[in-house]
Image 1 (cartoon, one colour):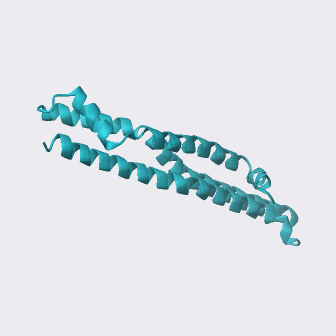
Image 2 (spheres, rainbow, N blue to C red; image 1 turned 180 degrees about the vertical axis):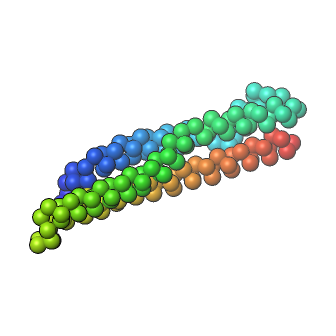
Image 3 (cartoon, rainbow, N blue to C red; image 1 turned 180 degrees about the horizontal axis):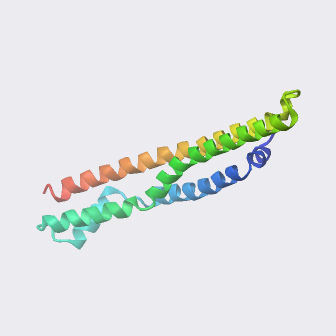
Length: 158
């Protein structure tokens, strides 16, 4: 079975997961390209505020950090929702398997294998989408935390 057959067999849930994956990967690429280096952010803050006013400086650092964090909520939500959608597909597939068993009995085990197949495909798809999004989210949060600490150290610690 090739990839397209798996996608088709997984049904609407796999299509939803593919859609979420496209959105998430787009945001991940955008964040990799737009998270500035620490120096650029520090220089931008220094150019905007007087470094003698600590409150203004702290506010500007927080503002810049919030700008860096934009879009990360979507990545986090996709990482959280994808395995749940996979689980929903699992439940649906098992339900379909039992529905077939109820109608046709257990005489032929291949009768209910379609439902089990749906269950496994959607579970796998959910995990395939969730894992890289979870890793990317944690990576970006770590990068932004490091930038924030270094900015506060360089600007406020002067």
